[in-house]
Amino acid sequence: MATPVKLLIIVTLFFSVSLRGTSAARCGTSSIQVQTINTGATVAGGDMVFEVEVENLCPCSVRNVRLDGGGFATTVEVDPAMFRAEDGGVYLVNGGEPIASMGAVSFRYAWDHFFQMSPRSLEVDGQC
Image (cartoon, rainbow, N blue to C red):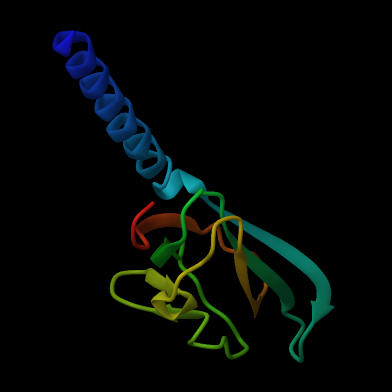
């Protein structure tokens, strides 16, 4: 009788570890969605204003989200707490602070065209 109980415990532990691992696996760069929208507004000099929304589609909170900036430039100041340059065209989002599951942060910039930005790295925040 002890053997079936041990087997049940082992199977239960296996599935609990496996399920925990699948949540973390979904929290890669593919779980960060970056959308750039032309707001229709312009600034002095004629540059268009774009809004960038960085959304966390992961079931976990994430932090230290970094984007490849795609040659980013702007003629208006961007709040460095929301988006700031690091090295080599990499930008830190939200000052490295957590972005909740299904949450989003956004910022605006102005230029004569939009920049394609893509997720580069992130950290899963705490246990998930």
